[in-house]
Image 1 (cartoon, rainbow, N blue to C red):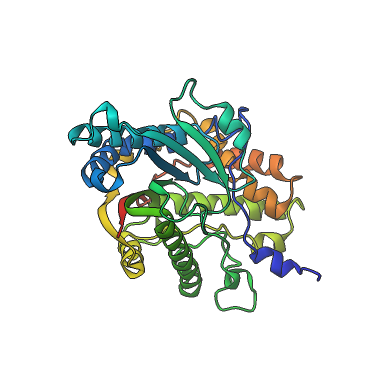
Image 2: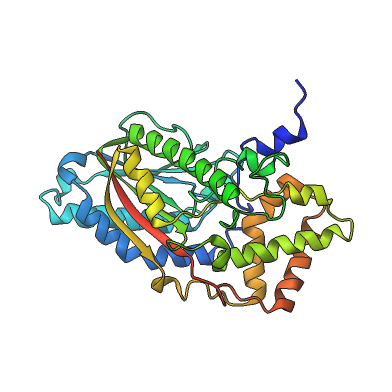
Length: 366
């Protein structure tokens, strides 16, 4: 059967970061994400150590998964923080003796197109843990029932499984031809994105509920927006506006067709804390053990060493989705143009905009 262009635009597409370990790779350009991990380390260790029930989870093999691990090295830091919290809890209980010391098995999950080779080549030397890669979308089952003790996901759940179909349909009231993202201003567009996010979260939570042992935890860090604020008013929204304006500028040069720009929508959605809590409570398979909105700790996180460093971070994160929609030929020229416009505009991440929030939560399998 012939697949139409309209259908290909709405099919789920795997979003992966730029592979390898070169100067433009995600491996070399993810210090912002590392800052998020560092900013929440103490909070995560404290919360896990307080909420983990070692009586229920006592096992000779303790299994931890990072959902949406990407290429590294941040996934290693995150899982090491979780292990530290588990060890801390174990030593606070009667399980702190050598007879019950668990062996840790760590699973790294991402799409099959993820650069797992670079990930495993960069494993810390002599890691005393058993590790495995698990390819596949976390919007679905990945593990046997009741096999995982702690799940983790950082900077991943704001990526939707696909762009909502309505926003690329020019005959729909939710058509989003004037923007590349969900600004939060156009009601029908916002509704379409919110519905897709709700469906994806329900799928994610149901899959994890099957995989986690009773009393198991899942740690989630994801981008969000303050209640009552549209994404377009935030720092990330301002960035997407600049990014989209570059695409429109390049239609005048003939590098990109205007129709391709109008059909380009980022599969991203940033919920408010209120919205996210309501979805978890509606699902009913987890209790919310810890829930925080973080902004203060992140003020220094966004301060990258230079404008060029910031531009490299942008390319590492968005090159894949650009190639998928526009093709390989335009990528170098686009990011060169984006870099120049970024410098000319004097754009600073977060300036004259509301701060985005990082939502940190720990859920327990009921």
